[in-house]
Length: 440
Ligand code: G
Ligand code: G
Ligand code: MN
Figure 1 (cartoon, rainbow, N blue to C red):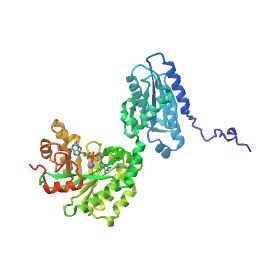
Figure 2: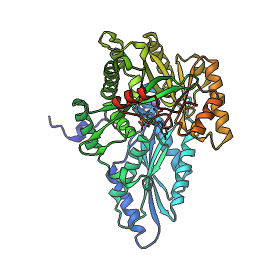
Figure 3: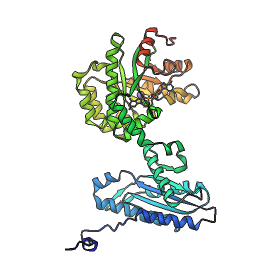
């Protein structure tokens, strides 16, 4: 039997075709090309807006394909209905649409169109008898430059969408991404990071935390450092972001934990408690729990280890984080909530969360010198934390004035360039012996 495409085609069955049909990307690019041509002798610009429904796989997995496809269809229909007739909406996939704006006079019109799209989709949809709210991420481009062709305009929109995702932004227009980022060879960086992890090239520096009342160093925070032979010094946030994006974050975390343990042993009688930062991805991974529960390989008492996690990471999946925190705590390891004040914690979680320490974000701390409101925030957080029996750290103390303000606000411990910059292990030991930090 010949298997022609016709004989293989599936005809709609009677179990309810959703009627959702996508348009190939090639066709969309042809449409863009036609719009560019029509504008060739004018100053008008073409805008390309990619709209992606967030968590689409989750919607499909939870409610089923028919529900998800119906929702997609409703999104397209509503966009078509509410946007001006000259605007084209094309579904590229179930969760991805492109909106073509044919005649922008100024860039601001693109921003307005994006706002409008967000507002249109955010209104409740009713799908198969239930109400549903959609969140989207948007990446957009426009033909600022007459030399730009349709495939390039599409690429710029794709790159903006990716950037929005990576930076957790609701939207991004291509001219908001710096050239540096656009041209940055992320793939090469990723490969080199993978190699560096295999060859133990990642090191840690340590920044002291000092108790104000006694002047005692109560511990250090370990911060990752890496000098790549290809890229030179790589910023820690870029190291972390690259590791998260490429599935290397577990390796990186194990490495930093190992660094901390080894360092603790090497310090011998000079050893101080060490805090290690954890990123969100790691919390959700059972491998972390297995790693830290193998206590027999430890050359470090569990009480000497603190794990820091940002408030934002915690709130991404608070129930899961609570569960993991409880387990970690049960092993005797301390927990610290980092960058506090930037992540919309609910008091409900704060009330029950098994942590021992709160670190007030340095944005508030640093601004105490200038704004009474920031002083008030630090005071209030300190009071709340103390009420809950938690240690309060003010991070990012850069001068004596802020040091005193932190003390007056009721913080227990300070960390920042004023006390000490993060230091390599040997220098830190010398520093501990000199104990040269300012003690009022
Ligand atoms: O010095 P600093 O520039 O070191 O660090 C920048 C950011 O990177 C901070 O927000 C810090 O929490 C984070 N960071 C530093 N080291 C680590 C690490 O080992 N693991 C994780 N997950 N984050 C780290
Ligand atoms: O997010 P986390 O709190 O882990 O970040 C620690 C980051 O803060 C590191 O990048 C560290 O180098 C930086 N840092 C530590 N002390 C200071 C300080 O006094 N001022 C500034 N600007 N950054 C600091
Ligand atoms: Mn930290």
